[in-house]
Image 1 (tube, rainbow, N blue to C red):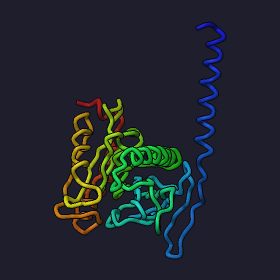
Image 2 (tube, one colour):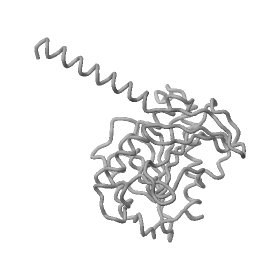
Image 3 (cartoon, helix red, strand yellow):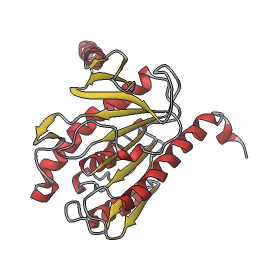
Length: 276
């Protein structure tokens, strides 16, 4: 490569980096802290083109406090709300509630097609596109907030699919994923694991789910395990595609355990792994 070509290549790389940094700054519109009529503290942000509500659950804390982070991703047709999945948590946690970009009935959707339509390509494209947006949300919270450990991601149905997708495509952005009644389309299954610390995945799925069937979830779990992911699947007998008490009994302790594990990770010295 001659000198002129080297200079052109350098300039192009420099411009690309500068544009990327500028776009990453411009894709965030952070809102101020507020309180609703019940006294619940929250803030509304616009990150990577989606609305994100930030709040604190599990006890009193300030937005400036150092807290674990849980991002809950809603399902098809749902909307931003504090989910039952975090009910019973008795320690303050920063909760991120992203809202899907497209309206659907009374709520919103992350994909223009349902898993029941058997259009896997369109579904995979939508999940990949929106996982990129959600990865940007995780990046933002780590940059802007004092985070205990690594973020935890969970969600039901489409939210479960995106939890799997984030763990597969952006493993360095999260510490743990708890997908509920979701699966990972074959097109999004990685061929090999990234050379980073892989997030723990603790999936929960009803055995009688007629919408997101458990078979593809089992296959996705086997594939992820085969390339090195620490992944488990808890099957809840007789549960269909609905968040029942039985499903909650399986999910809630796993979220609580994930929060505690991230607290323990945070408390360890960076040199601990060098000790015998």
